[in-house]
Amino acid sequence: MKPPRPPAPTPSPNLDALATLLERHTPSDGIHATAIPRLVLIRASEPTTPLHALHAPALCIVARGRKQVLLAEELYVYGPDQCLVASVDLPVTGQVVEASPDTPYLCFRLDLEPGQLGDMMMEAALEAPPDGELARGLALGPVGEPLLDAATRLVRLLDTPRDIPVLAPLVIREILYRLLAGDNTARLRRIAMADSRLHSVTRAIHWIKEHYAAPMRIDHLARTVHMSPSALHHHFKSVTSMSPLQYQKQLRLQEARRLMLAQPMDAAMAGHSVGYESPSQFSREYSRMFGAPPSRDIARLRESLGATP
Image (cartoon, rainbow, N blue to C red; front, side):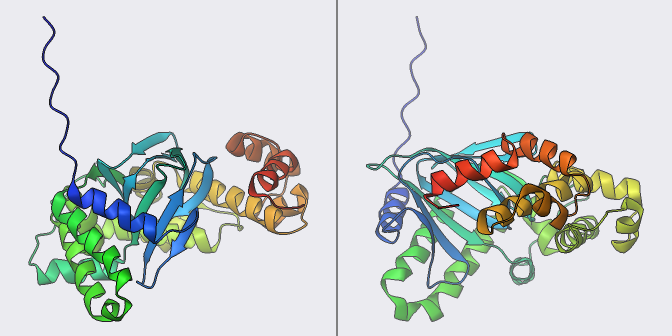
């Protein structure tokens, strides 16, 4: 005899309400800034092609549809039953994998500020996390009803703009508290408390972002962030799933792609502008990351975006 099927999960009224609000405030596909600082709403009416981008620290809640995010070789797939939390800047490849005109993909994204997390930890008298291995800077977790309710109330404020300056900061503080007290406790509390190792990794990330086109010497970077080269490599990979050199390569290739798409720039010029001395190496690494040589990839991308060369 087959075991009985577990009962279907009870639909969440908050999730339905959030989906309704997101659909109303995203009249077209794309990324929509809002009147609430750092709150962004995203909509897609069909599955998308992979998008390579630098994911800033943020909380993402999918109210409808499903998305996958690739960090180095790690794949994160999530929908309405989970939220995604990014705690540092990470080069990722994102793709909406479940969406249709009748049931579009709808996402709530709130960018996070470490300073606000630290203030909330002190105000709520939350303890610092125990020492241990640094957690990955990207993680999935369940969306509890209290967090979902706060997110829904934040989006609902878009219906009453005059309330936003007074009430939005209060709701955002509640969201931060729910995150710090929930399943992402250790990860986010290390950000809030400026864990010395994570702080050094974050400084290394910022240095690479500012100097991505310059040659990188790991010993110099390690001295800059007050770590030994071996410790920097170990902790950097724990957080980002890649080495500092791999991180730099991702930033270089993403920027070169952006330059070729936005300007009449050939592959050799784009590669040189982001720090490649060898055009053949640039083309080889570009093809490995984006699945096609630069000229073919840009032509394909322009066609998919409806752009002209």
